[in-house]
Length: 312
Image (cartoon, rainbow, N blue to C red):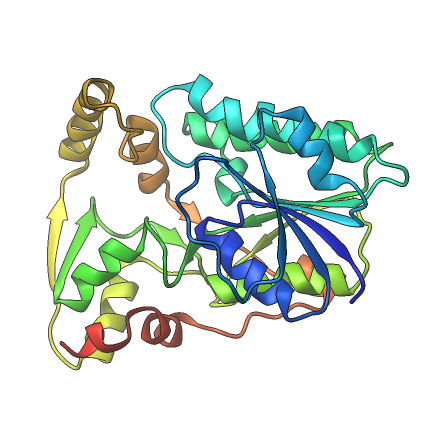
């Protein structure tokens, strides 16, 4: 592969895994990193680091200069207001897309969005991801684009699902509401491989694809708990949190986050996302377009993610 890849989000959960996989393909990687970032840059990772952020047009111009493809992994997943999410997921993406479209020739552009964009009415986060997607659609005449909408992604280094999985590995399963809502899951290495496959097939299609681990019909939390029981060969105790209590905690979390100065994860919008009945995906379109097929189902993904913690 002789691609020159401009990559955002390389210090994050998904982007870091993608950078590792891309580094093995022989392509050149130009990655954006915030000047104040404390993330330790791996010495064995052949990456040209561009200091800047999504608000800095000069650093974005340097990031995409000479690139044959742009992979945009960066995004805001925590926040309390519409403005906080839009600042990164809409405004930041718009600047990056503008910088890429100004290149001659324009590089291919892959946006790692989110399945949440399928239901933009649920939360500020979901709405911001849908708005970001529209930025690319509106630039179709100048920028060849593809959008990936992965479902819930997990693996080593995850900050969202991993804490829940660690509790389950200890035999305690927190469950929101009835636990009957269905959702798809995706192991992080499979997502990174789907990006590499997109690069390999030289795809220039303007289309949106959902992707998951291939388990038909997705999972419920009861299915996940049963998987842990099988892996642990011991019982797992379910602790149910009523939806009304989750909503109350989420509402109270907003003023607390303002006082303490942190970006909240649990918000009323996040509770609406978590209680949504159907986050199930279908890989058929992506498989047909690129040939990508996921390799890791939940049991193996949990083994790779949790290792010895499953046996303690």
